[in-house]
Length: 317
Image 1 (tube, helix red, strand yellow):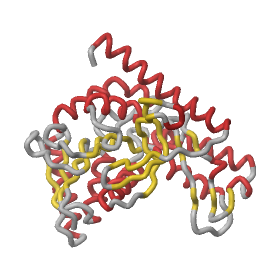
Image 2 (tube, rainbow, N blue to C red):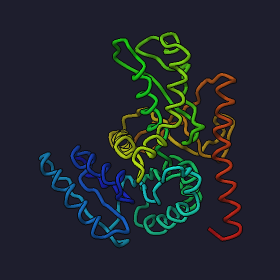
Image 3 (tube, rainbow, N blue to C red):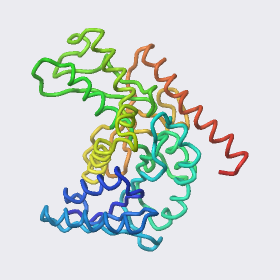
Image 4 (spheres, helix red, strand yellow):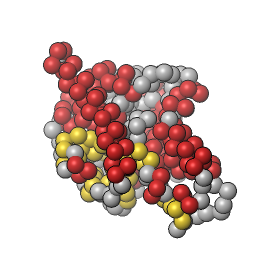
């Protein structure tokens, strides 16, 4: 058991599932939960604590409602925000969730001076931008979980179309967390074979279309919410990489500093995660077509940020 505290802000489906994953894993010894719903948060803390005991570990889960309680976290995951509804784009969430994210940093940053922040709130990439702007922290300590989730969806749809036995799918999604994401189909390997040498064009197009609309499909089916098991588990794996200093590679929404010819804008790209958060941003060799797709993907983020800046000028958000 590591003497580590992890904070989760927003105890909805993603936040509570993440807390459960952390509690039963024994990865940390304290989990702090923060949400505007006090009784609900207390109930989740009790329920998840009892699940930890069923797993025979002594992880403590605590509901926090004051600045003094929510402190000394190694990692803070922010999932708070209004929920996405059917036919609602991530950009529709922009203004309200920006206020929520910035208010969170006002409440918790002082008591968690060394924390690494993982942003999950949507629209993801723009929330990373808002969090960086508000916190003034370096990019290794404020970044978003999105590409890891999009990659898991990519692998799911690849697996659907495979009729061969295999041991490993090596795949990656980069770009914005939107339907303009860039699944790197030409780079996918099934064991040591390229996917494009295994599947036909129709199957490839099916994989790409469903990956790019993977989150929206779940929203459509649920009608009253969005995905949570896969997002929560991807967050858990990122926390694990940081706590264990594993140097594993995840696609994260990170502020670019010249990589891929972009500056001061967040974008989902492969990163090495370790004890300091993002240890290194990896720059892939991409084809002209892939670079063009990445440019289109970045335009989604630029448009959201420009909207945010325009509103900021008018309403002082």
